[in-house]
Amino acid sequence: MPDLNPLYWWARLLALPNESRAKTIAMAFLVSGVCALLVSSAVVLLAPIQNANLAAEREARLSAMLENMPGLADIIAQYGADSLETVIVDLETGEATDIDPATFDIAVAAEDPDTSSVLPSEVDIAGLGRRADLAPIHVLRANGELRLVILPISAVGYQSTIRAHVALEADLNTVAGLSIIEHGETPGLGARIEEPAWQALWPGKELAGEDGQIRLSVVRGRATSAFEVDGITGATRTGNAITAAIHFWLGEYGFDDVLANLRRERGQQ
Amino acid sequence: MKPLRHLYGPLVDNNPVTLQILGICSALAVTTSMTTALVMSLALIVVLVASSMIISAIRHHIPTSIRLILQITIIASLVIVADQVIQAFAFDISQRLSIFVGLIVTNCLVLGRAEAFAMRNPVGLSALDALGNGLGYGLVLLLIGFVRELFGAGTLFGQTVFPTIHDGGWFTPLNLMLLAPSAFFLLGLLIWAIRSVRPAQIELADYEISIEPNRRAP
Image (cartoon, rainbow over all chains, first blue to last red; front, side):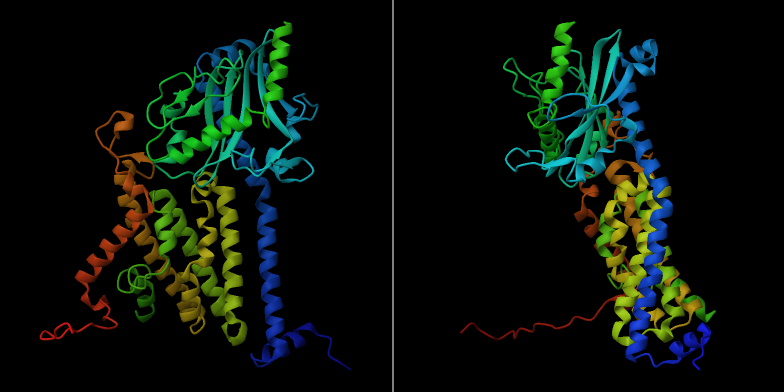
């Protein structure tokens, strides 16, 4: 009768010569099994903390932008924080959906083939590859009147994907502020886009000219008109990425339908 | 006292970065600030010590034919765990380190110690050797990070030391310090300095070209 004691089999396995085929295979499976268990438990156990970190980071960046915008803190203080509402909009139709913003994760939506679309290379100026069909925007209304719209934009920069929020004033053409949420550009060069001094250049800039074409861009050197923002020396490609993000996300494949709807709503009032 | 040689030997005399020139890639990439250099060093020390101990503990049962793949599996798993822990508990820093913690897997230093030392020595000695090598690596990273952050951004651990002209101070940051080539220069200068003090570290030239003084062109 064979010995069923697992310790016996364990000892027999260890006693095998190292070069035997059975021991080689057994060691390969044992090591990879233990390692797989270790890695998957670490990922599963730590996932809630990591997601909370990401969410807190997004919140912090958004509220930092709101605080830095002149006059905005007063409006929020006056009408309460509830006056800022988050809406998930459909980029194809420009209509608001009734999806709960708390359950919507744009990062997941942008990767899922069901909820995103592939961008043809000629329109993909921001280098994103895919774009989610839905996007969260923040709208600030006071007394039912539109005051501010905050749109998420993104583009591939020099060595990372840059994500930012751009805030537009009620005329939907004047920039109220730009805030970089996430980037991994070169420290000291491209990373200077997150400096408050550079972001302070944005408020008051004009988005589109008389003909409705988007003209706002980051230029090399000094800005000479309301459609230009000073570039950062040594960070041309990061500046170009911000320009591309503005042109892409406010253009035909971005929020232009959403903005058109908001303009119509404003015209009716 | 003998076992302790494995701990302090790699600090200067047998430093993995300046003598063996291992782990250069990450030494260039994460030394733009002291904070990232410190976290990277800690992550490497943890991974190096843990992997050396595990590999040393099972060294009698590792078949020679698959030893490298077993070592790298263990190292890679530990690196993923370390990366996840950093993402969970030091989120800001993990964003700045980006992929470099993950690239500890490819750091020749870790596999080098596993293959050269942990496979042949008991657990305690392997742990000491791994700790010494990790500290030697961390020392170089922190030295280079110190110079690069101080002269590139005027800060140390994110605290302003020299007020820069961007903030209304007097110091003009040297942008070169924040780019990868500056780490090469600093590393080269450091190796030169160490080898000037300790000539024993200078390697013999592999070959020499001798030219006859009287030889003429045909």
